[in-house]
Amino acid sequence: METAGLRRPTLVGWSLGGFIIGFYPAKYGRQRTAGINLMDAVTVFSPELEFFTQAFGELLPRLASLDLSERATATAEFLASCFATKPEAGTFEQMLVVAGMMPLVVIQGLLNVSGEVLDAAFAKSGPMLVTYGAKDLLFQSTMSTRMQALNQEAQISLYPESGHAPFYDEPDRFNRELAAFISDRQSFAGPRARREPNALPKLCNA
Image 1 (cartoon, rainbow, N blue to C red):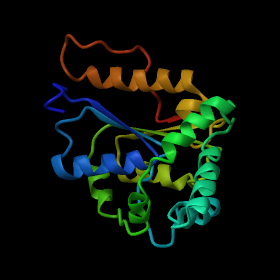
Image 2: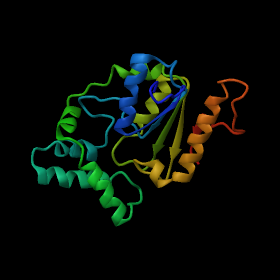
Image 3: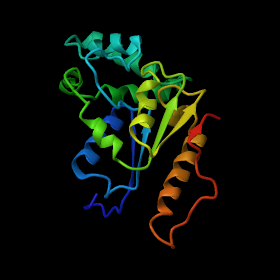
Image 4: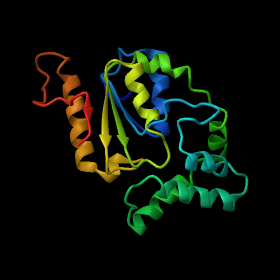
């Protein structure tokens, strides 16, 4: 962030990206960021996979399979499960190519990750917008809502018509809410910062 010249940016992470974001406040604290937006994010790994749906629990070992054919099939199933409305064929094919570029060693490593240490970091990470699609076929809602119990500055935004990717299923609403969240954080930067007239409520479900 220093190299890019960023001054207290808002970190935005989707799915596993949310888990990766957790390591930043764990190392540096909250002083260098204005806020965090977690979108249907992994917030904890547990051996029992209790925060994942049964479908994802069955997909995970297949995604890490040494058999290329099995792994390719599982990747296509995983990607299709991300959306409440499946993208057009051409777009989906492009997404599938990108998803298939994930190194096998990374996927296999996920099976041995323990993320409980991040709870303390998320609890003290500062303002947080937690976006969750109610039609998520991969993660249980508790994966996201647990953040509100950990972080007193967390606000939950529920998307009833979205799956695992609210930013794709409902882009207009997602962009509007993220912009408002960022603007609200800027209001604390000084008198020259601009503040949106409407801040998000504690729970947004419409």
